[in-house]
Length: 297
Ligand SMILES: NC(=O)c1ccc[n+]([C@@H]2O[C@H](COP(=O)([O-])OP(=O)(O)OC[C@H]3O[C@@H](n4cnc5c(N)ncnc54)[C@H](OP(=O)(O)O)[C@@H]3O)[C@@H](O)[C@H]2O)c1
Image (cartoon, rainbow, N blue to C red; front, side, top):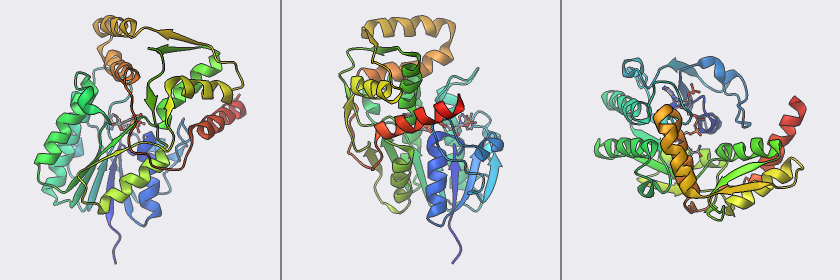
């Protein structure tokens, strides 16, 4: 029997690499949609795997240029997309990438009769609709659900890669935290989330909310990062209103940066605990990342 072909959009990112590996391990033929194919050859900054040898085919495309996505879905059985704007990029908005880029991909998928579309949105989206990146994700979710294609929307909590930034701050010996740090989160490792994403290929569930196996307060996640680098915790808590004010000022001078920071500010002000899944623990991830940093120095 021929292998099923899956298009992974966002294949060069943290989650995209783990999903590529999981699909490949389960016998699918992976077509990677990326802007820069060279990226797939090296391990990522948060230990996500190199995938150049796992993909069957690479196609180049840019979400900001919908014409470049045309025919990406030709011959494809399943589309998985985690293509999204997670870092500031000059002159690019979440609306262009998360909403319109994914919509162009959906139109291509519909034109080629793709059987299933799996998309990564955000847990607690309904509480953060004033945040551009969340709104853009949800506008695409509406397009997807009304398109008639068989689909699953996955709503994860924070990824371990996002928690990786706490480790960078811990190395410097000091961290700032918005709010009192007592909100709770169950972050998830890319490999654990990838299993849920690939299981979705055969699932009839329309939406899946998912987090990692352990729940921590933000203060606990930061203390674990200090422990991993062998430093005493030194955390300065900043009132939420200061974060909102800083965001307002940043928005005037650097809207792209403000768009990305707005998500972090919103998440810090909420409990983000989704149904638990997976086996990877944040403390081990921090220790592995810290060890990698030591070998680099
Ligand atoms: N990180 C979290 O904690 C978290 C939590 C919930 C949901 N999510 C969502 O999950 C998705 C994946 O997150 P991630 O952490 O894996 O992000 P990531 O590592 O930044 O990966 C994003 C992927 O999208 C690609 N991309 C960005 N702009 C593009 C464009 N203009 N054209 C084509 N590709 C583009 C990136 O390509 P390049 O490598 O070329 O930049 C990369 O492959 C995002 O939609 C994010 O909002 C993330």
